[in-house]
Length: 97
Image 1 (cartoon, helix red, strand yellow):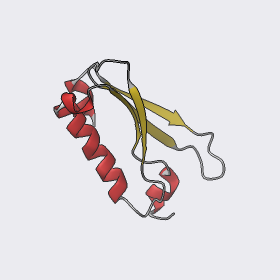
Image 2 (cartoon, one colour; image 1 turned 180 degrees about the vertical axis):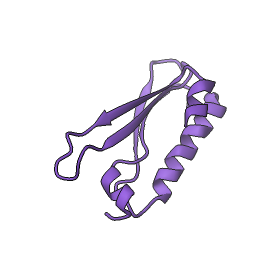
Image 3 (cartoon, helix red, strand yellow; image 1 turned 135 degrees about the horizontal axis):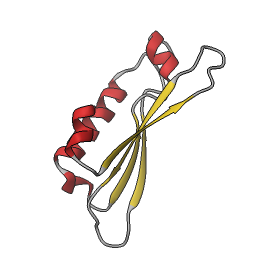
């Protein structure tokens, strides 16, 4: 993901860390992408993947979608995205729901 962050100032990464109950601290990654202006402000959309830790296809698709936005910024004209590729980091790490 670091290579995407270097390619465009339109993309920002944030890390949200839990207090850790009951399994210890976990980090939730959020990516914020702002497309080129498109007229009447931005339409904001959230993409949430990896809710079930044993289903990785959505997480991979979210990262691929983000990569496409960075490479083809015109696809996101008028949109602002908040992308969470792994919403369940504990389940993802354990391969469980």
